[in-house]
Length: 111
Image (cartoon, rainbow, N blue to C red; front, side, top):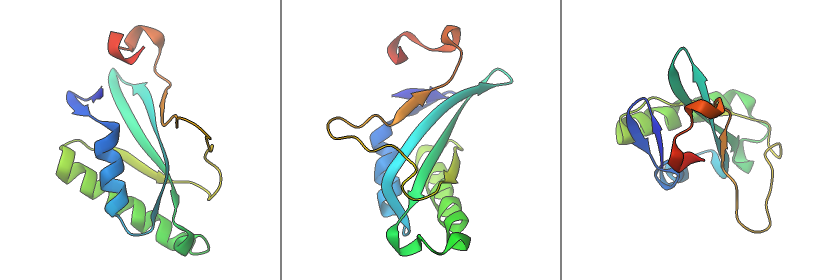
């Protein structure tokens, strides 16, 4: 669990929402940053194979995912499509959360 702008965000909740959005594959990562005294989370996802050659639909899938996340979790996250095959693949446990906040702003549970 990560707290973003006072809201608890669970990786599994984001994953379940992404699974329901047409055109979004299960290759995604959550990137935490800090800007202007606020924690921000960006969801970076690879489009589904059906959209791989239809770049104009990537943004549409991202907007729909962002709307669904806001509606379900009551927090606005940036949702950004990335090039298919650009996110790392893991053989064992998948690492999906990348914390790029300065160390002093990470909570004890996040360390």
